[in-house]
Image (cartoon, rainbow, N blue to C red; front, side):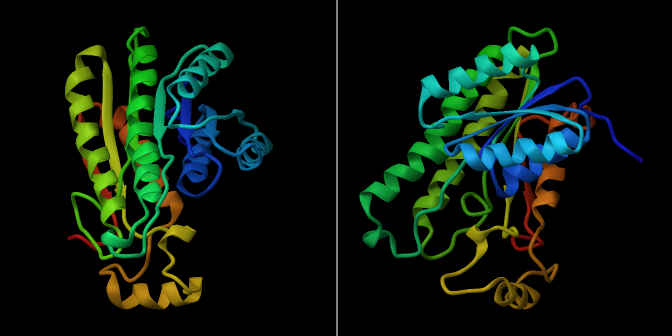
Length: 255
């Protein structure tokens, strides 16, 4: 049965050119949404749009730096100009810089993770909320955090974990601040997912599959489509009373 939970709604996905962002954009389009994807590189965004349009959907690609307030405001304005509203936003853009002990982490890597993973979400929330609270129907926002953060820590990822913990806390604070504006804000915290970010140095996908069999309770990592399904749930009317939650999807790693 084809689901149509988002028919007539407009969805913005940052970091929509690959991985979880692309899977999420495709999933929203598959349920009837008009989708805008934003990110730093035009080519992968265009590929996501082509996939949506090939399946009969409507989509728009907008290059943007999520660490720029002006860029994010322009993305929101272009979204509304094209499709008339902003009903759902998924703040997914993020980077991982690490793999070494904290004392050896270059300062520029620390700052880049804060700029994109934390300030980028903060600035996106501001631009999105400013638009959504002008709409009678409000809106829903889902931020992509991580199990690295408030849920677990690993060597070589202290700065990344700190940035994603901030996303989780920022999500809850924003949820409390703006639920009376008719805007629900929640987060999804993925564990290991089928993207390059979950590969260890020198590890192949086959190696990762074997490792997951013994290190994860479920015996496998998550598919990007499974993270997308969690995002769509939180953005949908099925989750109408879910406010300020941080939904973990991690194959049981933090159970």
